[in-house]
Amino acid sequence: TVLTELDLSCNKQIGPNGALALAEMLKINTTLRLLWLGDCDVRDEGVHHLASALRVNETLEKLDVRFNGIT
Image (cartoon, rainbow, N blue to C red; front, top):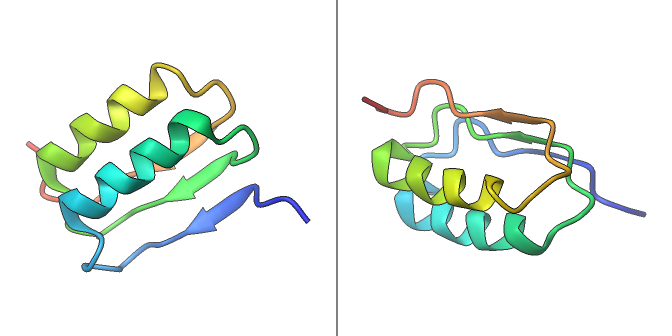
């Protein structure tokens, strides 16, 4: 079985540090298509990490980062 969707919404424990770990995973993952991180307290720092991963990840089709204190 291949992981193609991951919903971690409403998990405040993720925060910027968890976003960094997810970003590192996204750099090498070639199967994940959908990632929901809504309301995970990711903030600006975490979104910057995720954005850098998206520069190399060509398979992710949807990334939800709503309600994360992003300015």
